[in-house]
Length: 426
Image (cartoon, rainbow, N blue to C red):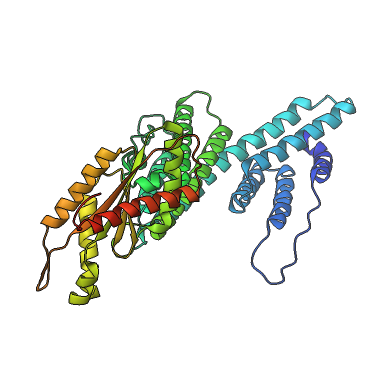
């Protein structure tokens, strides 16, 4: 009989004392297993392992406990804390009884269990993590319109590369890109030109998550290369990386929703519903920095005549044609909105009156010089434009009333351009 078997009754008593009474809901024939039921089963497997005698049973029951824990999303720290708590309770009770004979052997018994559990948990966790990310990748690949998910796809490939590196116990330089600005996902974030997205809280959250994720990734690589490798540390780091990765995925999904709701289905420009949010943000920035920005409001001249003469289908072609002129003429940092019907609004960050008028005149001139050819039709049209430079001081409030007042002021300038003969900038 092994020495440790003498203490099996004490170990069983410690485990039972440590257990929390858990009552699970009764779901009848439901195949769903509630978390509380999973914990109860986990504790049964935990006790079965500690009372195992043969090496074969120890290895088999260690795998059973670890596999069950990972399958039911019971964290490594929960498993580790159980082991430590039971060990301390047992050793504490023996010290109280002044039973010091086998303290070293008992401590070694729990240390060996910890090492086995940790090593198996790491490899099983990494395998499950790879499967989850492969599944996410396959779901994205099946999407008809990936939009921003194509960038999350590159991030998942980075994750799989890192997982493979750790799984294979590598210590060479075949790890994924650690610089957050040089990986494919980081390059997209750095070069993103959708300015309305850059101003959203979701994009800023992604930037922070991505930076933290790469910081953890660098720690994982450095740890893999060190002589002090402990699987428990790698488990913790990889679990944090997975957590950040999922949060990035959630934020990307939010950006996808914004992209869906923010774009006009005809022209693919931003919609008016997003204008107020961006406008309030720019007013805040202008108030904080003292830098002015400008608005340009455009209205196609005699657009009713186009619809009445050629039909609404041709009118839609004209609207798309003009939206292309706007995107071609303006800067990547400018926000272009289809404001309603044949009206368009452009928000120009950090742009003074003179530059706004210059850009507006460029749009006006290009529009007048272009001829739209559609089927048997050749259509020439013009646009009238109003401009407004906005300067904020400490006395002005940043609220919807200020936004509405700015809209009214630039609309007055547009009306003046119409009154002065159209095809002009005011």
